[in-house]
Image (cartoon, rainbow over all chains, first blue to last red):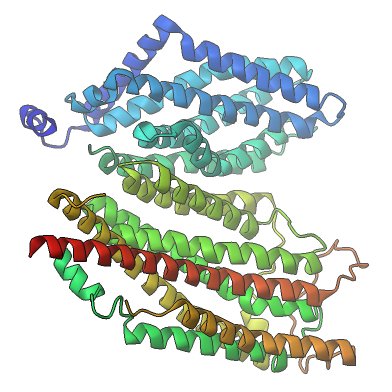
Length: 243
Length: 240
Length: 106
């Protein structure tokens, strides 16, 4: 069946970069349209993220040093709700064996991966639209506009890295038996550098004086993390989903 | 195909013969490690600053090196497997992962014991400690996934071990930005007796590593052969 | 089936254990009797305490060294035993399978 389909697809030569990106946009648009109709993932994960923030706020309510607590809470909320969302995105793809149809369609594998990354990124940004204001509200944060801009930059780069790594892992495990637990097991150690840098960089924003040089180094390392893992995953993804 | 493997690995008269070179290698490893252990306690002097606890160094550092050797091993195996889909690359990758876990665990145990004396705490969030911890954790996750992921477990394990190596580098960079207190490279600063003890220990550990890797690869080969044989038995209707 | 028996493996391990642990035991006995051991001839400059460690650290170093030593031994030889055992189990299974297939074929 797979071989017949492969024969039927005429284009075997490498698709150009624009074709790949267009395919990625198609895949992402499909995911977002499905989500827009049900709003299931955004609602459940966003709500979950809100609760993570709340639970942590309760447990640290006595602590006066919010500068040292807030970055941790923020990134833990991102990490937890992200894992939840990732699981759902790919569970949806598995229902009715949609992933097979997607793999059989004349879209490059690279496009499928990139499209999924894009979709996950949009979901996670949606969740952070809930988590970030919640953190700001419950902890009485006072941030200048520049710091807010930096915070958004850090969170976006971190989320991108999360989406890049998480999408690969979730798609790897799509056929595995106990994939929810397995995803959590492999995801958290692999995003650890991103979490470390994210927490450190976010912590800088709450300092009385912004250490801009250090912040720039952190941002650069985050960007490097995203780039390196994107390239590696594009390579790994291709031979991984052969069947 | 399975006949060839059986003939190579397995003789129904003699059971599973161990290649003599492997036996020699294992004996040599045991001998050199025993000699190194003797030198550690009788030949090498007590270190001035740290005293007796510094003797952990002679086993800690070789273990760490072997862990580092395992990383390229498993990366090569994984890349080879993803490219060629040949089982032998997967066996190399699996052996590398396992050995990295074993020696990584040894590093993680001996290191804190030393740190307890040297730093006053079992654990500090230092570059090497953290990246070793994360590497070992990722590799254990990789082994778990291999066990439970089902049909595409080999591909997943291969992909994961590549990511684990990349990740360890990033953990290194990120923690390096953050803090550091592990002693820097010390080998050059050792006195002559310490140096010879250390290098003998390194030799012993590497011999042991060779023997372990060889045995592990043989085990993988045997596993493949067994799987084929089982398939054949099922085909022939001898399954139970 | 003739393969390296359990007893042989255990004997080899015990032998090795004695060989590696004997110097440790003797060394410990010596340190406890003579107290201070002769200091290093040429004090190497490399090892230095990290600033901030409490000066009152008076932990028995020998206990830590013993623990590290045992960990190395248990780790490496635990792995050897694991490989040997699973290999033996697989060989056994293979033998029975092969003999059954051969019997069926002839």
